[in-house]
Amino acid sequence: MGATTAVLPDYEQASAALELAGIEPGVAEVHGIVCGVLASPGADKVDWLATVLRGDSDLVQQLPKPVSEQLLGLYQSARKALGEDEFGLTLLLPGESSNIVERTDALAAWCRGFLLGLAEGGLSDFSSLSNEAREALEDLIDIAEVVAEDEADEQQEHALAEVEEYVRVAVQFLFDECHRATETH
Image (cartoon, rainbow, N blue to C red; front, side, top):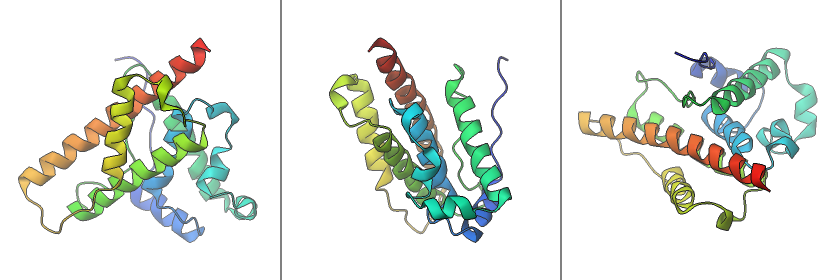
């Protein structure tokens, strides 16, 4: 096996820390934003923390050290995972002990965050992307709008796992394509 996989914080602990610090988006959405910024063509020009905090510069100064360290850890693990050639990205989502509604809602929030991060990073001209990348973006937009149903069965669990895997691969694909496009310009 090649490079070591970047380690993500525990979902519940990270969620509680962000909530206590008054950070509005949930931890899944925050992780999506960070990944979206990193995948965007203008990643090096975007203040990812300001994007996460919705531009609230006062909040940046007031963040407790453990929260700022946790956010930095999220950023560093996402940057490392996306930079690997081995599809090492893991989405920061609730575990299987959470109900399917919570997990589905978190996946939708993750995708919304990712799309926001891409937009903040300057991905507005889809014409420079391949057809496959545009289709992946359309799929992520659809997933971002998903609303979960109450009941869970084995088939829904399997479907959610497949969608999570698809999102993970689509994000890596979009990262690679956006960075390949910026390298050729």
